[in-house]
Amino acid sequence: MHSENSRLKNVLGEIETLRMKRQQELAHRSHSPWKRFTQQELNDEACPTYKNLLIGRSRRIPDRQTIIGIAEYLECTSGERNDLLLAAGYLPIQTELAGRALELALEWAQQTMKTLPFPAMIVTHTQDIKGYNEPFRRLFAIPSGPSGDTPLNRIDLHFNADLPVRPRSTFDKTSFEQWEYHAIQGIQAFKRNHALSRYDAWYQQVIQRAQKYNAIEKYDNKPDAEEEPDRTQTILAGPESSGELVPIRYRQMSVSAGSRLYPQIQVFLPVDASARKVFADLGCPADCEFGWTTR
Image (tube, rainbow, N blue to C red; front, top):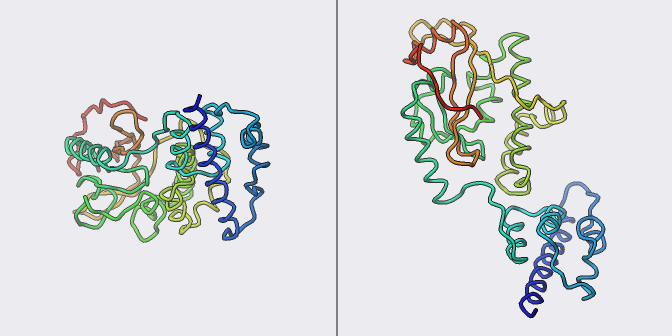
């Protein structure tokens, strides 16, 4: 019983520390949210027994889902949420790989990408492109440089008009509509896949990067894209030797290590005859079967 009381005291202390921290942050917000982060509001919105816990009428630690709900109400980062869960005696929620685990996953991705006969790039949960192969560089006309240290981000690759990918993917009305569809689907998928991390600094940095291109304002409020999106895209491409560009259709598939979505290898496959001809010029075998399952 003493251990249980001590754990409850620790949990309440963690919650109150976070609650008061959020109250102090209200003064620095550019907009006035509906939340005021009071004890009564937390009680009403996330934990109906919270006031009773504070005054000692209840001594039962809230269940795991309630603790997660409190963390959601308090707009906790992944670290703050996990601190609450651990204080309450529950297992933390592991979202994204970090540290040595991420390094090992990236090493696996690099080694795997070397075996692929198609254009491919490695992407992390922050949408940073951590490497790409030579067929990818040539297909998308990426300036030459050390691909392992590329500063590219997938958001830049899609939206930055200074890179060849954007104008080559929006050369007529149909291709522009297709490009917009993939922008909407990509933003929605990012928010859906990382909902538990949306108060983390890295997540906010990705959103800020997208806002440089007004992508959130333009595409975030569009109708939801299909759960199984059409992964076919169109781009102007052609042999570097001739400089002649023709419309080709390609599709993407993702290869991930283990159960985590990221880091992943994005692989690009030809769809039509024009694409197969361009891919063959890149050194891709025309009759190669790609055996991984798409994600």
